[in-house]
Length: 167
Ligand code: FEO
Image (cartoon, rainbow, N blue to C red; front, side, top):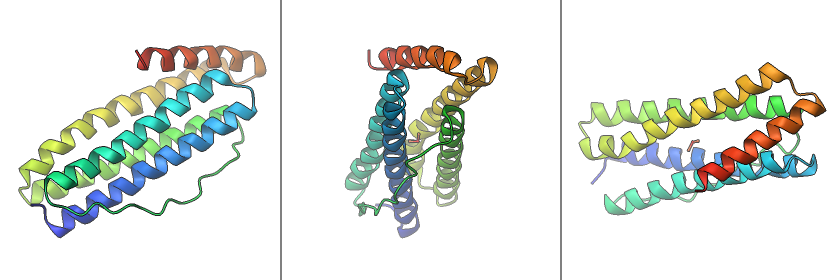
């Protein structure tokens, strides 16, 4: 059993993960329109991962007799100023998700809900990895710029990352 507060916070998390999945899908579609195939496949993979993060909470709720609510998902932006601004937005969103996970950890801790605390550890680690990845992509873009030539190399790099993570 989980408390109503924890249930509400987990539902909020479902909504954030669902929005992230939608946002990254929209980003992938934008990259596709720019001819950036590597960025597109990286973002498609990220979108799938976010859906998995969302479904994992549904599963947990089912195991602890909670009520997972299927969220209304806001329309994400469809146009981005540049590849750099797209990844800045992605990084910002990941930081928001991290904050929300940490708030959930605080809540579970204050309620002595050790089962939920244990469940959340996976997300704490996942967020560390995702923020690190987003930061290192932005570092690369800042290093070599986002001129058409630089984008060609960024695109190859991201194609490699998405290939590696699907192994
Ligand atoms: Fe599931 Fe990237 O937050």
